[in-house]
Structures are given as structure tokens and as C-alpha cells.
Image 1: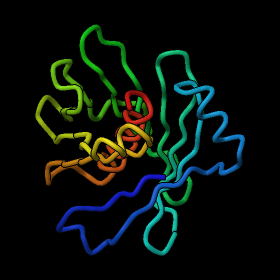
Image 2: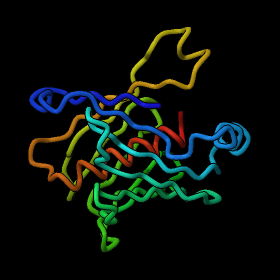
Image 3: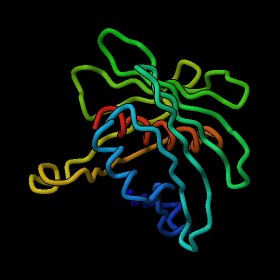
Image 4: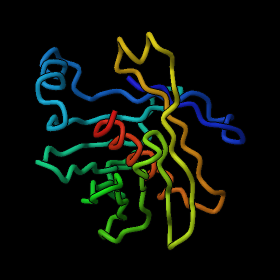
Length: 171
């Protein structure tokens, strides 16, 4: 389970929750045995447990793919792992398949990812240190996603999907 807390000025939205759609014991077994190749569905819920987004990861050999759907189940885009020799790269695509943003994790900064849109910096994604015990004994992770003020809502939703794909791939 992920806990996502928006930063001000969005603090009026309250706490969001991300839950895996399949809660059976088989999902836990599949996640542990299949690791990167485990396909999953997650739902982003608001404080009233209303679905805001649905995120579905497809199992692929290397080029992992995560589809993002809005609260009505309409496909709004996808996050896709891209090949790179030295960096970790995830591209974000709109519903027509056009690349709208790219997330790049430089090799020399393993916990930091840079978001680029139309050739300019659009934000950062950082994995935060949660302490020795939590890092060693759990899969719980804390991320900070900061986006420029002019990034539209769809790209923000896709960036959240990209964050979850990065978490499942690298952490």
C-alpha cells in the first residue's frame, strides 16, 4: 500500500491512498515470486475512498508498461520503460500514444529522477530515505514528486503513473 500526501497548495485535497486491486493471497505470492514480471492493477483513492485513477501494469520482458485510466475508466495514457545504456528512462504518453514527458534517472544520482517536457525541466521525482529499519525490513518507500506549476492535469496524472512504474522497476 502506498500513501500519497499532496503538498500545499493542494493540501485541501486531503490524503490519497493507492491500493492494489487484487488483494488475494495469490497476489502476494505472485509479487514475491515474479518480481518485475508481476502484472498488477492499482487504484488511487481520495479521502472518501472514491477512485481517482486506475493504474494497470502489463508484464513484459524488459519494456514494462503501465496504463493510466481516469475515474470513469477512460484510458488517459501510459508510462513505458525505455532502453538506455547509462540512465533509467521512462516515457509518458497521452491517449494517442504521443510522448508528452520523459523521466530520466541519471546513473550518478540513483534516487533522483528528472522530468522533462518539450525540452525543458518540468519537475523532479526523488526516493526519500525512510530509515535503516524500514529500508532493510520492508518494501515501504517514500517518494517526493514535484512538478512545475504549468504542467497540465493529465501530465500530472501520468507522472504519478510513471512514479509507480519506477518504484516497481527499481525499488
